[in-house]
Amino acid sequence: MLVIQILTGIFLAMHYTPHIDLAFNSVEHIMRDVNYGWLIGYIHANGASFFFIVVYIHMFRGLYYGSYKTRLVTQQAVDFCKND
Image 1 (cartoon, rainbow, N blue to C red):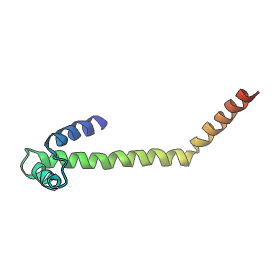
Image 2 (image 1 turned 60 degrees about the vertical axis):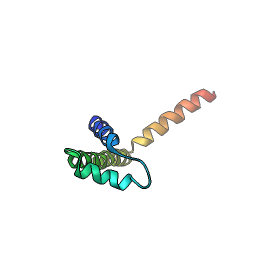
Image 3 (image 1 turned 90 degrees about the vertical axis):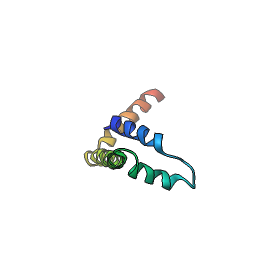
Image 4 (image 1 turned 135 degrees about the horizontal axis):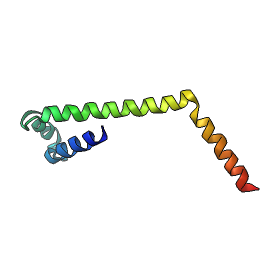
C-alpha cells in the first residue's frame, strides 16, 4: 500500500507544477492529457484515504482494547526502579 502511494506520488510529482498560477492547470493537465493520469490520480487519492482509515482503525483499536494502559504501567514500573 505504501509502495503504491510512493510510486503514484512520484509519477504525479513529475507532471505537477507547484506555482500559484499554474497549479490548477497542472492538475487538469494530468487528469486530461497524461496517459492514464486520471487513473493514477484517483489511485493516489483513494490510497491516501485508505491509509488514513487504516491509521484511525489502528488508533481506535488501541483505545478500545486499552493497550495504552499496559504501556503506562510498564513505564511507571521502569521509572520506579530507576528512582530507587
